[in-house]
Image 1 (cartoon, one colour):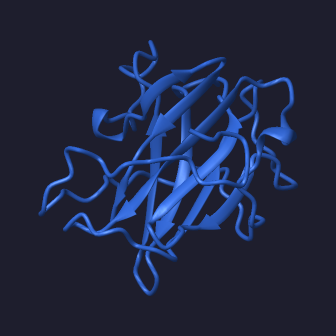
Image 2: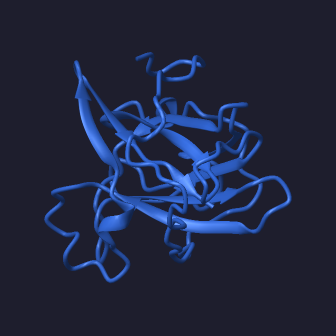
Length: 172
């Protein structure tokens, strides 16, 4: 698997992917969304002191067909639990490749008051409506106390050498 570069991670379609897949749950955007994020999948240089992670997956329709050209946008807190409210630090977007793959090289967001560790996403297939959601980390102690947390939005986490890798397939 290639991480932290412009080459797509080696991803196989989810083995549990069945026809009639349930749509990804929606969650609120929260107060920190900013429109017009840059076309950028390498966000880790914005926070060099943070713990690096690659998050990746597919955008699929509910029949498990990859949706190439889908917009995937991310924003999240930094290593101190702060969001950039004036610029585009730890914010970016991209379009899925022809196989529906997306990935971001970023950092693990820190906790902040009232929330568990999470990433915010907007996902939109070409010509479709926008899905707004959040992805969470497994075994995070504060998951149970976060009113927006749902197990269906957990990243599938792996340790690859000295890096973390999180996988999630959006179904829209």
